[in-house]
Length: 333
Image (cartoon, rainbow, N blue to C red; front, side, top):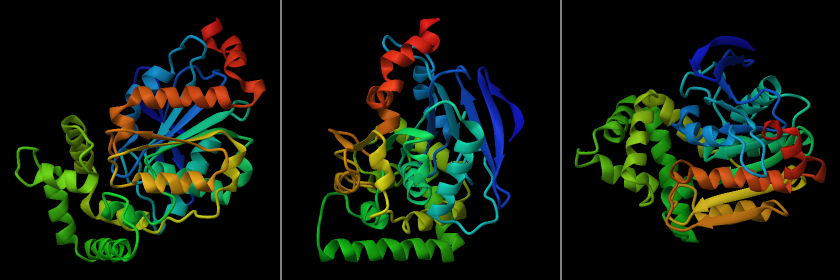
C-alpha cells in the first residue's frame, strides 16, 4: 500500500494495488489505535464520498461507545479507483474487499464490515469465498439495501410479484444489460438522461423508474452527479456484472458474527423480498424494514446506519462488548 495524497483533514488516501493492476483508493479516518474499525463498502455508481456523514459520526465518541476508526474505499472503476484489466464480475469485487481488509485494517482490532447494494454483494462474495475471516478478522456485518441473487428481478419489479411475470421481466432486464454492453451509443444515451438536470422532463421520472419513489430530490441530484463521474460503458459493464451475483446457499460464515440487514419498504432495486431471502440464509441475522424509504436508505438515513453499527458493537462477543470497548477506547481518555 502506498500513500497518494491528503484529501481532507484527518483523512489519508492510500492506494491498494490488485493482482490485475487496479489501483483502489482507500480512505482512513479516526484514531489509528481505536479498538474497532468500521469498513464501509459503497454501492453501484456511488463512491466513498457518500459515507461522509456516517464517518463523521462514527469517529466521534458517543456515550457508551468509543470512537471507531473508519476505512472506506472507492470500488474499482468508481471514484478515484482505476478499472484494472480483469474481466468484471462480483467475485472480483469480493477479492478487492479482501485486499482492502488485509492491507488497510489492523490485525489486532476487530472489523465491522458495512455494505450498501453492490457493496453488500461484495461482502457476501467475500464470505462465500473466504469464510475463515468471519468470526476472526471480521466481527460484525451490516447489509443495507442489497440482494442475495437475481438482481435483475429486483431492478425490474417494484413490488413483490411472484411467478412467471417476474421471470419474464428479469429476462427482459438482462437483455437490456446485454444490449447496453453491445451498443455504446445506447449506453451513452441512458447516461445523458440519468445525468441531465432535474428540470429536464425525462430525468426525474427516469430516476424514479430506476430507483422507485423513495429517494428525495437531493438524493437524486447526488446520484446524478455520481453518474457523471463514471463512463457510460463502465456503468453498463458493472450493471451486467451485478446481474450475475448469486450467493444462495453460500453464506454460512455470516451466522458466526452479528449480522444486521436493512431495507426500505419502497426499495424497488433490492426489494424487501430480497432482504427476507437474505435473512433466511443467515441464521441469527436481524432484519429491519424501514417504512417510506427507497434504495438510497443509507444516504437519506445516516443516523440509522450509525445506530446499526452501535447495535453490532453491542452484539459482538463479551470480550469486545460496548462496555469494554468504551473503557479501552478514546472516549475513556
